[in-house]
Amino acid sequence: MPMSKEILSDLLKKKFPDAIIKLEDMRGDENHYHATIQCQGFNSLNKVQQHQLVYEALGKHMGTTLHALKLTTLKLR
Image 1 (cartoon, rainbow, N blue to C red):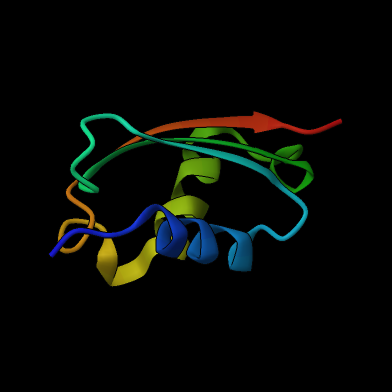
Image 2 (cartoon, rainbow, N blue to C red):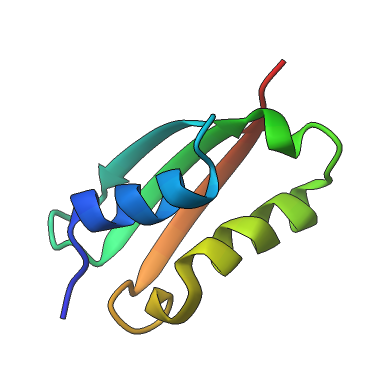
């Protein structure tokens, strides 16, 4: 079962309320997304830690309702 862009956005906004989040459905199938997240909370973290937080926000959805996620995380100054 695919994940809608709205549900994905809600999950990410819940974890990163101050972030600028852009989502692109890369194939139009609600299974392959590119997420760009710019967040002040990333400022003191390296890329691995940033990505871990994003995957933590998605929880059980990653690999089930969400098949693939291309992830770009950016610090917000």
